Image (cartoon, rainbow, N blue to C red):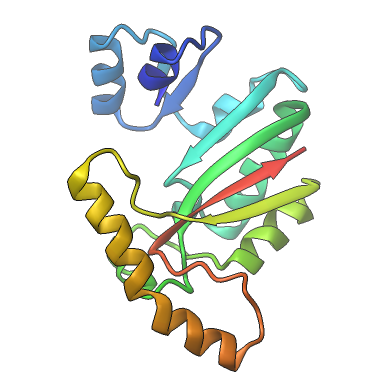
Length: 181
């Protein structure tokens, strides 16, 4: 992520990963701001109101309750006013969401849009939005995947709307959560 952010022109970057292999790969790509370590310890050492954005990609599902709240409390603390946290998490309401939830022995949980909003709001975030993790179009093959996803999910969406009159439906295996301080 740091590599692509740098490629996009961002300059004030830092990151932490528990995987020494991921850190070695980052360093091989010239990303020296990546450090190997525990995320909670890293956040606790970070000054308050000092970061514009925090990415928590495929992390929250691995945390037990106490650590989950400790991490998000610290993310909220280090974010500047109007800062944003973006998280990628397993979607418990996805058509095949349980494949992700139980596909990794280290997963402690999956989230629904409602539970994600509850979690982020409980630590102080004000605007929390959840998004379907749709196939991204970057060529003909991916365009076909996106069209097939859109068409194939229509019956599932219809049944859910009939049962529970809501249009806030996220059916992908994972979802993105955007939470603003």
